[in-house]
Image 1: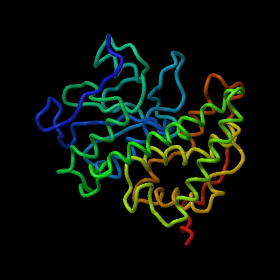
Image 2: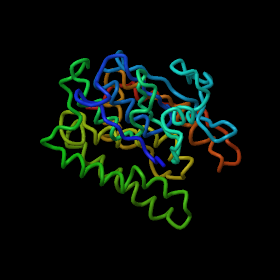
Image 3: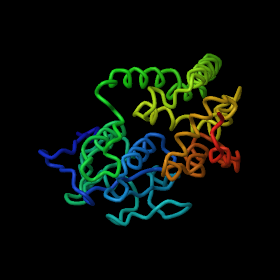
Length: 288
């Protein structure tokens, strides 16, 4: 009984790094899928690995669906109606959640991998002969331990911490921790460093940034983490804008889908998706 799908792509394996062989299924609201989406564009693989997105709401069976509405896509690869069909085609014994991202092999009609962290590793290292940006290394071996440390720290104290705010018993402690870490980040970027670990973007930035870009539009209001907006931190907002303004990264951001995936959850009573906030600041020049 399968509970995950974690195949790798390599020149000497079953799944080889070939142009136009793979398809990335995404949800534009999902932060995990966003990581893979960013890596796809950062490495310049968007012309050799096709991609499409499911809608941010679920169907009557609680499954992400392909409906072509609100900027989502129909499934032009397989003609499927929902994400479960991808998993059923790959392994009928699969018994875990039907999640995105999904890296699909169009040649063998199976899922290669559904773990966002592993897909980022695959995109970073296995397609350099056909990538537009093979020189970019998101996980340099020389700082891999530091990347892991950054990922663990921000995962514990920010990336996953924000979700504790919905628990009344944890809200106060979560509130204090989250804004303490945001202040730490603002202080860190005050020194002039461009990214978490220097002058080049890494996997650590991807994992952190997909949370930060969601903070003002979701967590500030919906999760009542409302002491400050990310845009209120002068150095941190520079960092957020710097990443957003990297070529094509803005194409990975869809605020309607981001708000939609959170505000239409079954646990919410009204399911009203807010119109705001205004996010034009992301296109303004960085503050010197």
